[in-house]
Image 1 (cartoon, one colour):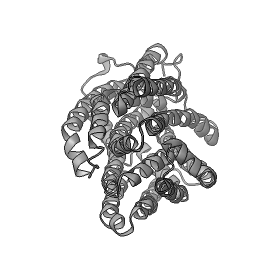
Image 2 (image 1 turned 90 degrees about the horizontal axis):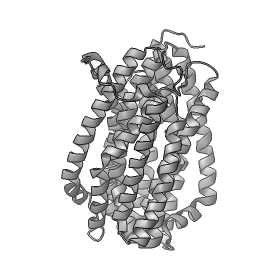
Image 3 (image 1 turned 120 degrees about the horizontal axis):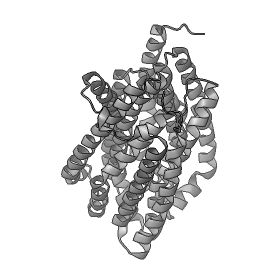
Image 4 (image 1 turned 90 degrees about the vertical axis):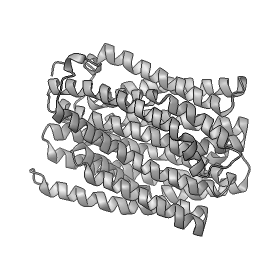
Length: 451
């Protein structure tokens, strides 16, 4: 490929464990920094503005995650196609895929922004957002949704860099933007007294900074990842492949997030203390999930490159390796939760409310104890997307959404917050079984015999 001077790395050669770890480590650190956006907002808001403001941001979190999840899934889906052509050493088709990725991402950004702003108030009302926090929640969300182009832009550029094996550059830019976010949070909330809207503005400015840094780097080091209208030629097959893979991965994450939004409605109905507890628990849980999510994301790129190179046996070995790494982390999280769970909750919320602390502790304890099931689910689901099997991963996400609807209407009213706490472990088990069946079908149909 005529990109010898670019910052790229092939995942189709060498030790699989080493490849996955070296590729995943920068993504992991980057994901942790991305979570610092949320943790910084939570800690600063909780300690400076109080429980109600924290609950307002918490009520917005599932909708934010829906936006971020769809954007990330969509652009990662585009990146899977780019990774396949990179693995196949087909520069011409890779450049065409890059050009179409810009076009499709821009279209999605416009649609998401318009739909999000129009549907914001009806959605927050439908979710039973408490009357004493709904104004702040909608104010926060309007800023985030209105600037979703930066969320999509960063995910698009970072995804394309990872597709060619460069997972370090996005990390550097997230490090800078995360530090900027924390500083801007303190400036807008503490100094300028802008409330939760100040936190949203800080997040948007930081995301815009990460987009600018990614673009400058790509232009200097990976020029073939910059939009080139010369490669924007009509290609129905490639456009359909990008759209199908991008939308399937976007929908996979979005459907899960829709279920979480519905589940948040059940949480909201349990009162402000439970909303605050759930907010803190989710922030901690999201951080603990990052290594598992990172292995999942890495597995999609690894599978995509090796599938493009025709190395099916290497794909299968990569799946086993990815699950092994994620399960090891799962054991570690249980230990951390039992030792440091309560201090972490108190540090994030700044509260001494026993109801908040005990409820949040129940959530993270039950979830981390079942992370080993989640590990199997996410690695298999992403790997299947990487090799072009789209239907079952999306179907499993649909099952997850339906089960969350059932939980919000049955478990929460019957069992209270405990019903919310046990919902996701049950869902992970069901969905892991579904994707495992499809993975074994893929293995049996593979041309390369298992060793």
